[in-house]
Image (cartoon, rainbow, N blue to C red; front, side, top):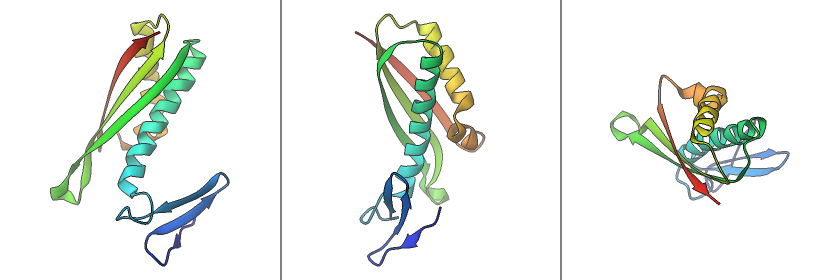
Length: 129
């Protein structure tokens, strides 16, 4: 990746699927801290979705909510990221969902990259159709 400084502030980069603007103040692009939390949340959600498919668990929706807890006395360092999954489907088995979540956590590259430095707490709820 290469980033180009923007005159009005922040940086920009282009990917094959589009442009992304990043700005520490959030006025001229996405804030890096938000992208950081989003990358962990969406990696986890994407991996969980793939595992549901492989386990032939039929879901109709997978909503991911995430928030980070930061220590402002240590340069705003992330201490914990909370991820909550709302899994919608018919006749979802709790044991299988928990197994899928454990596999997702083990195989999500973003989560694995921060383990040992940042706590990643995952919770879920099942919404029956």
